[in-house]
Amino acid sequence: METIGVLTGRDRHPCFNHAASGTCGRVHLPVAPRCNIQCGYCSRKYDCVNESRPGVTSAVLSPEDAAEYVAQVLEKEPRITVAGIAGPGDPLANPEETLSALRLVRARHPGLLFCLATNGLALPGREKELASLGVSHVTVTVNAVNPSVGAKILNWARDGKRVFRKEKAAELLVSRQLSGIAALKAEGITVKVNTIVVPGVNDSHVLDVARKMADLGVDILNIVPMFPNEGTTLFEHGEPDPELISSLRREAGKMIPQMEHCRRCRADAAGLLCEDRSAEFAPLLACPGGAGKVERPYVAVATREGVLVNLHLGEAAKLAIFGRNTEGGFRLVEERRAPEPGTGPERWEQLAVLLADCRAVVAEAMGEAPRRDLAAHGTAAHECSGFIGAALAAVYDGKNIEILKGRKHGLAKACCGGGDGTGC
Image (cartoon, rainbow, N blue to C red):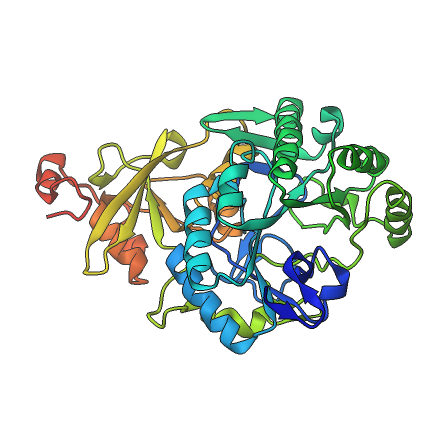
């Protein structure tokens, strides 16, 4: 077993072992842009190198680029002992990307520890696969074990194609978290639970969470003060008083070991906890393989038939997701079902999460609310009409897409493009 000082094995994880935090580092791989829940305190932003908090990253990587990024980071910072996936969305809401990244990095760096952080909604049924991939540490964020409390924090949860809200969402989430944690422990995986303290919401419930986590055999509890993000539903509650956090840790510590050295890390954090180098390594994220890879590879299109941009964003039941081919031209990657109408502002928040890997969305028309909310999450929103291929070319090449606004084309003529969105 590789040794770092007197630390060996699982002791080399700096978040789970305070003694390791000054000598053992971690690198977070931002390969998971989508999330399956929306918490009232969470705001995921991209391209924000100067802000340090969960959900923030300077780029989103493909699994292949993540493996290359780890290799480059290890050359510059050999003290790193852990590779983890913590977002910027939820790793298990992006299972293909997450599991592929774990496989690729493990193949190249088998001596590293592997971990991930999840909200737990999609955790049950994944524990054996995670264990087989060598994931030794998992963090689950559990803010409540009583759904009536959780409903005050959780806006919605998406399970497959179904969206649950408030107490029904919290009930589902709590159930999945408890069963998932129990399954992780049965597989011998070390489990840390993060509990975000929201003043006036769950602060008097934290000890109930601690008691339940102790009963489940959780290894360590991390009581974390909420980071108030402007524009979120819980922003006005503010950050809890440090004395409250200290008191909760002291009382919870009578039931379960406490983590008291958390840095509320970014989704692309790298380096020691006390010496984060994510800003220094940001250029590697933008170009891990030296080929100028981009962090948001797709463009979403509101279209009736897959050839023209000809649908109002609010009327689109689904969106066509296009990517650019390396040899030129564009390809249809998939279709994604848009959030159901009738949910007010939450609909556009859900859409922003759904399109977290898209640099832009183009539609024939859209309201100011979706344009604003999408932009706040890093997705540009454009109005235009005409051939999809022309719109995609304008977005990818950085041209003025507004010149395409109001153009009309006959579908019969458009069909000569073969239905691939590239036009004639």
